[in-house]
Amino acid sequence: MSALTVYSRQGCHLCEQLIEELLPLVRDQLDIEVIDVDSRDDWRRKYDARVPVIEFDGRFVCEFSLDRDAVMRIIAELGDSSSFST
Image (cartoon, rainbow, N blue to C red; front, side, top):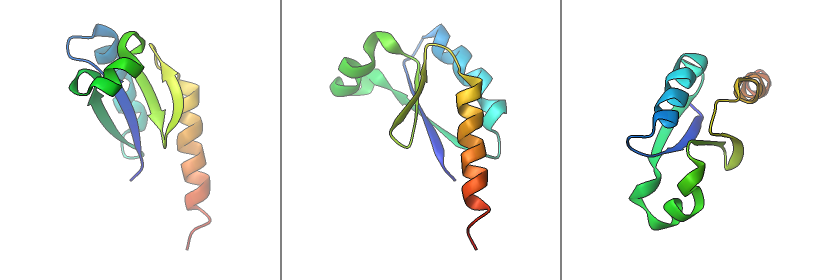
């Protein structure tokens, strides 16, 4: 199953809220990989004040608050591509 990557940090209220809103939206359609930006220096430098950030397949999706439309487009794209595979 494909996954959304959420760059987050411990104790971040915005991060917790975004993940809480994201879970029911993607249930049974996408996995969620939560990455603590403070666990690596390069992530901390890249995402420090921007968290939470969502990426999919290396592409930026949204930051700070959940962009439901962007996530739904990803789900729709995955549904369209799976209908062509045999």
